[in-house]
Amino acid sequence: MSICNEQMRGLIGRTCLSLDEENYESFLKNCTDRFSYRVTTYSPELGKEMVWLEHDRQGYELLLKMLPQHVRLQGRFTRQAVVCDVAPDENDGATVISQLTVVHTDLDGESRLLLAGRYVDKVESGESGPLLASREVRLDTRVLGPGIHMPI
Image 1 (tube, rainbow, N blue to C red):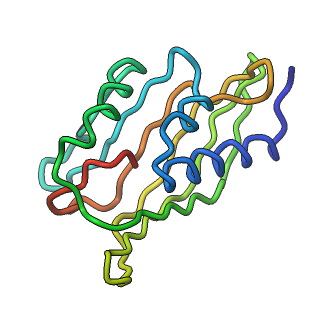
Image 2: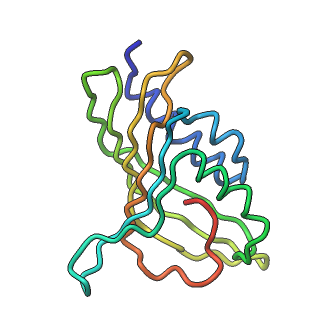
């Protein structure tokens, strides 16, 4: 089954909404069993790429399970991902690149930009539509502060 660009946009939007609502079960329903997750950035000081976090699906699920035990920023995170490019592959999947911003709103209602970057998502065709096979969060922001353990 071939996936159209509109389905890709819908998938990226659904994953953002699920993460915003901290509904991780819903997020994982949009992922393959082989899902992998990475958070990366480029360090000009070191002159190289850095991997801040890397998990397979099992490791990602464990990360989600451990979230209540971590100190975290209180309030709500809101993700905005704008799909910029969809590059189909030969297996009815695609690489989807989205510009990403995350806003944090604290308990007093004050909002601030938390981070900027992009999602680089590998998408595969599933029985009922597209699924995330992998997500790399490529951050431009390199100073996040303490207590940011929430999935981006």
